Structures are given as C-alpha cells and as structure tokens.
Image (cartoon, rainbow, N blue to C red; front, side, top):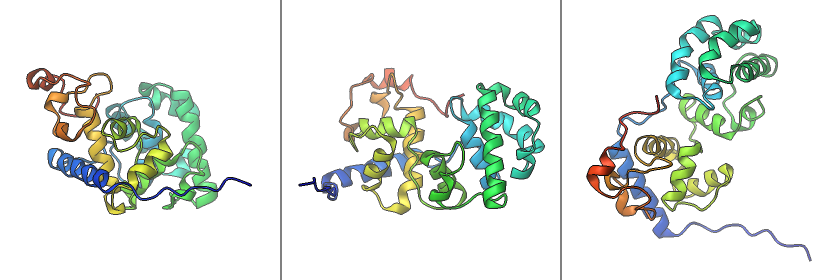
Length: 239
C-alpha cells in the first residue's frame, strides 16, 4: 500500500512560548529594527533586494541613487544599455550577472505585469531571479503582506535558538512561521536578522552580551564573559 502523508501537528506549547518571548525581548532590544535597504517603492525594493546577494546593504544603498536616476521604472530598465548598467553596478561585484538579472527581471515586469510589481507571492516567484526570500521581503516591506525572510542570519538563528532543526529555507519558513501569529512574521524577520548582524555572529556569537542568552540552548558557542562578548557587538549592519 502507498505510504500516507503525515501532516505535522501543532508545535509544542513550550516552544511557542519560548519563541515568542525571544521575539518580544529582541523587539525591546532593537526597537528601530527595519529593513536596511533603502527604497522608495515596490520596484526599487525588488531591484535592490535582487542585487544585494553576495554584497552588503550599505554598498547597495550607495549605488541605488545612481541606478534609479538612470532607470526609474521597469520600462527604462528593460531598455538599459548593458555597459552603462554594468558600470553602475560594478562596486557590488558580480556586476555582469546582476546586470543580466535586472534586464530580465524588468523585461518580465513589462511583458507580464504592465510594468507593475505584483503583490502576490505566487506571481513574484515566477519573475527571473526572484525566490521566496526576495518575494517575502517585497511583500512584507512594500505591500504590508506578512512574510518570513529566511536569509543566512534568520536560518542560523532559528537553529541556534532551537526554533527548528530544518536547514532548507522553505522548511525553516514554515516551521518558524507556525510558532507565531502571521501578523508578526515581517517584524520577526527584522528582529532575527538584526540580532544576527549585531550579536549572534556566524563564527563567534557574543553570548555573554546576548539579551536572549537565558532562552538560548546554544549559549556558550561564543565567549560567555560579558566584557569579552561586548567587544564583539556591532552597532549596525555590515559595512
């Protein structure tokens, strides 16, 4: 007989309570938490998110004014001169691949959506270079549609904090999302990403200065001495 799919049950109440307490604590720690990419509209956010791969938000923010002065909308970007766009994106690295991505992305917006960024995840993920992570960034921050952004920081912290054992980004998204009301998803993403950039670093987390240390099953992966840990803290995202 064929195997029957097993639908996962609700997460344990103790895990839900601990997860939400972690989020409340991080919200108090980072009251200004927000997306660190600059944008004025959904198209700009979509573009800067796509080109933020393998570089820093600060570098993307630095080239953004020049990029959108030259190509303020999908129509102008789709018709862009490749060499000129590559020159603008040069400081980001991988500029040829990123130029190709933007040309294909903007052309698809013009051809399929009349030059408008769609506000549905199912539509966004059909666009060239747009996966669930990018789609959720745009939905949560440009359209006010709750979404979980599973970047490297979110995935790392979800596992360190014991919220899930999953490593696949889509499975992480669903597992962690089940612990929180949908309305909290976007801000939860900001809280974990900010904490990952400022305190819970990949190689050497500042455990001794962590506001959620008492709730973390991975406490001790980094220095536990408060003074030593404090030297590892960053006041902003990556330069």
